[in-house]
Image (tube, rainbow, N blue to C red):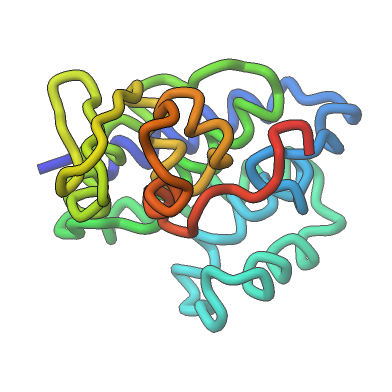
Length: 211
């Protein structure tokens, strides 16, 4: 069984490490994977989501009203305040993860950490922050895809055109962080738009990477 507590802590600490070095210019950078947000907005959500989870403030989750409230409520917070809040909720969140098979709170942290990495031009986050999420989500979320995805030694999908993807690209695509055009770069022309649409849990990302 995955040690979700460790994955969560790794994501939090890597988020805190990134945040410690952000300039004012960095904080207002748009985040390509969540183009309605900038870097600071992602940090507000990073702090706000676990706080809301622990407080039972989950009405509307994970929709825009829920996340938008988290950002608005932290409008006057410094980055240091946000990281203190984020780290402060770690013990209580970790305590909830012992027997959870599919912990959405961990997935959320891993996905948004990768969002920050890409927005800040930092490349690929440490594998310890996302690989367990792909290994957990893949057999469940990708099992019925109308195509076959080969990812290292793993194979996902229910048959159909065969494509190959790196583990990180598949992790990002599975959480709708890749556009259809970006997926086609590794999927090729043997797959249809409808087959690509099925990869992401929310469909493909609709905004181009430059958004």
